[in-house]
Length: 278
Length: 320
Image 1: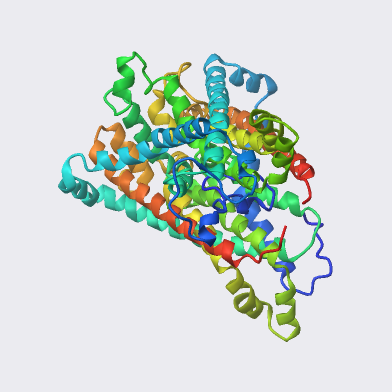
Image 2: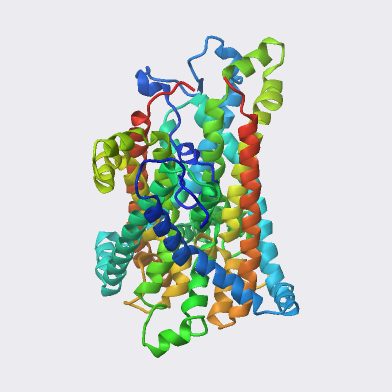
């Protein structure tokens, strides 16, 4: 970044503002994140591998990644349904429901956590009727799944919504007037053009759920190997002063989320390349 | 921009979260019947689904949002007031609750102020000048959005903890960062780092540099130009960023939980107190604090919606 050069701008302050930006960025973000990787390099490869493949860590990672993936799949389908209803139809309370989609973004995670737990606990509003069918949600992996669905839904909706709004109506009108029935138009014409946005929303929801802590730990039950998520295991290792263990798990998660960012950036580029000019 | 994340580095992402373009804004439409298709195209029968399918999709959307999003919010207030308003107020008047509220306000004040100043500075450098590596720099600013909150706390433990890189030095000089206000503030600044900059960069890029260049050529100083020309142009975007930054700062749980040490009455923020009280089965007290945070979230959402509308109106229609 030090080689950055301002080109032909008559405005002042490039050196000063860029210097301050890089300093602040380094102090708050880069140095702390570097500490994480530095700490990992203190471990030998065998030690690192031993931590990651220990039964409890492996199970925590499986639970985090597996349930996040499942929740993101639900978000993908339900997010599409919600976007379709919000963009294509008019119904009473539509704008209210549009605003409601943002609540999982806005609500502090600890509040969401205790609220979902209360709701799905055995005596809760939803937990009690579900218990009659023999379904236990709170303090089981299903609870984790529910919390991850809650936290992920705005990502799909807010990523796909602007794309569906901007979709050129002429394309589907053309498809229809060429004899395609509505089913074909939706599944062969409209949904394919939403694919980059859908995948981006899916990836964002997936990434968020993997790292999620506050809204999950209350409802999870936190039983090692069964309902213990990876972020919680990091906290547990820290409280046991097993910094190396905590760091190794954190690095695996961080690398995974960097890969997802990379993927999302590629998706965005792909989406931009696909946008028809009109 | 999202409250909690925004991995996407496309600079147009902010507008992604603008409310749906609504035809009823421009011309107040007559009362609309349930499940009516979007008006506005001559061939609208070609662009919609049969009635029963419309009904099912709307019903699914409403049911899903009601169960997964609205009900949890209602539970917060119902539980907070389950023993009456007296118990609710008593829970909020507890010294522990008051200490948590005070600490939360202090942490928000510190982190929002610092991120506001540096967010504006970063946005100026990024949006008003051309340089190589700009996209990469924006990606770096976005990083905290993609880091798990727990990891955001962990990195500061690795730096300042007893076994951390600076731990021994801090102990020798009797400086407390971890399990004290500075640590909580640092973790909060980390997680809220991108909000202001990300709200401003697309806006300032769109506005270009002509007005500022005119001011400079007329003899204004750099600071004069910023305060008299740039700031009035970006004030709503700035407020938008500050609003989201503040909401996240007050509500942050994971990162703060790792660095706080949970010292009662001293290092517990409101979200941490919600956890402690809930684990002690003090449900009314826990949900009373939670209800304050939920109200903060609702107020933020309303203000955000209003601001988004203002930002949309301020936008010059450019016809694409």
